[in-house]
Image 1 (cartoon, helix red, strand yellow):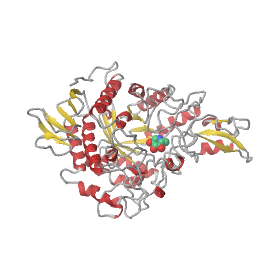
Image 2: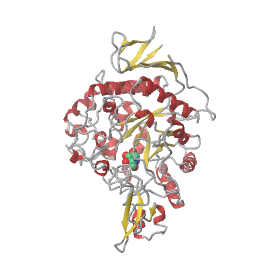
Image 3: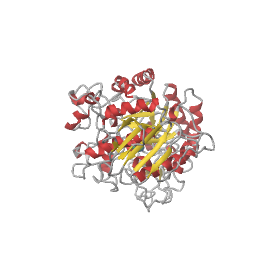
Image 4: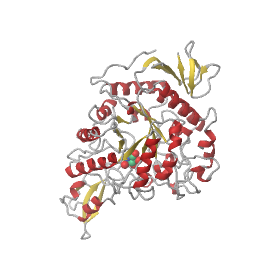
Length: 556
Ligand code: NOJ
């Protein structure tokens, strides 16, 4: 048995505020609720269902992008940062959503995409029409090509979605011209964050949404804005889902020190507003100490803990990632921000049903090894109870409260994630976690919208996951989430320190506040301590014992 605790004081004192322990629900607008029956979710659809999210018991919502966009990357290709994509509604709809969310006691976080714009953005169009070396091109990363006629890309960087990270433009006179950098799709040109104009523009975009009342921003690709000045070659593959790991030199496109002054400036702006507006970093950065630099007291408030999301379902791996993460964020006085699923990864109800130790797939298709659905859901429920007891904030991804699995049988022709095409059909990509979610078992599109239309097909088996089948049904995943979110509030979980009682090869066991938490990863059922009063468990106890792949919360 190994006993440790991580409640040491940080140099700056711990951060305080609503966000330090908030449970924040990610809404993926295309797939949450469709008010007009066109098969694509929209803002009025979300607004109409806010009451159900308040009833679930979350504190805030984060909305993936809903801005005007050609949707080359499902809205992460923004053509106008101050508007609403007509597919999703209008600016008035956004104002109403924010006001209604606040009336329900829910805070609202919106997505900010500062690493790149859409190629349809007015700035990029102007850059294409302008000459090399012009101020218009200076807002992006344009370079001459290599080789005698400039026909080779400026360096060897790969796009995260596959293929080269550079595209050559055709000049207004029809001749091949310079190349521009896009770490993602060709339709997502990277901005040049050395440009004062780019910096000023984003401060203004922040003000635009702060003035409309949003409570914070999730910052897309927060570790990517600054590139190493020499744009040096990098002979490694490029992956969206593994950050810079500690064993390798830091890639020239990720986690450069220069990003931090940008967030300090943003923080000063947010602090000038009332009501504790927050920044949360989407930064695929390892090790935990590097990630913690994004949440130093004068920078962002939160950074998604992706190392935790990626950790194997074993007691030693979970123990290691939890302790490492808490130590790293404690050292800068910040809470840790836990997450198990989002719109970029295989849903955890399926991911945890894959064999432990095999490489994690980027999407699953019919011909691929399939997850064990029952095992995945059982482990997902145990993982969720473990996560929601940890000190810090936690993010939930729409549908996980239903135990929703990945759609692992999407027809390849239906796929829309650019990864599928750009990887030359070697990676299926992220569509399987983005399928519109089921609300009512017997309604068209399971209540997603008023018609059968759904931009990605929903599997026939999803009726059983619908919210209305689960609400009020004891033991359902939905009721488990509601219950533990209520208990989390009642017992002030998410706040304070964690004290390990045991961590071995099979069991994790800790105290947080007045609650004991035990997760059993081993084959044999284990008892709770003498006199423990069960608060809730991820599945029924087995003769009073906590069975395999289960978590129990108890009062000692
Ligand atoms: C991260 C987002 O979560 C993902 O969906 C998107 O494709 C990339 N950033 C590029 O914006």
